[in-house]
Image (cartoon, rainbow, N blue to C red; front, side, top):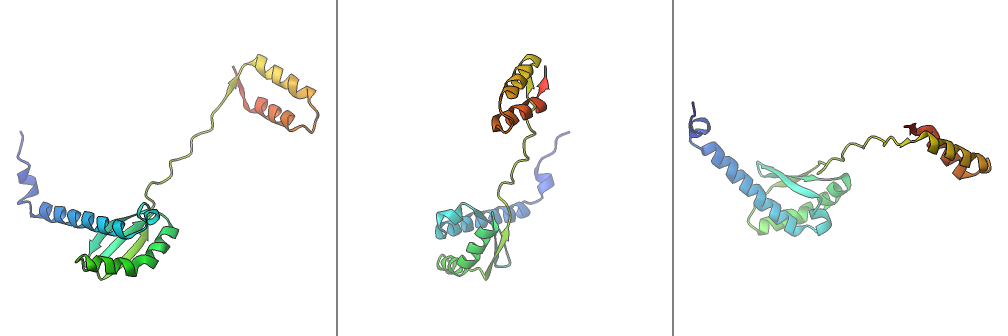
Length: 144
């Protein structure tokens, strides 16, 4: 049995408030980005506005420090645009966390190739770095 979506969202006032808040944050994001130099603007974003306190997330601690230095200028610029913000808080939040490292690739080498590499390594001087690399390669490779 299907039911209308209006039944679940009520009269829409909560959604209207949420949409208005999102629009305010989008406008603030545009204003803040226009005032910051490009190297800072690319590394931060407006996160929230609550009780006249603007929260900006910075990608790194260094960006957060530079944003804290720029806070008075941002407050003035926002006031010139008609946005009254009492203070700006800066929090460090990585924009894109680093992906997990890839597992090491396991190489397979035929037994004949392993023998040939061992033979080549045996012909090289004991202190030759190539000999050590070949021996390490043969030791770590799997035979097919």
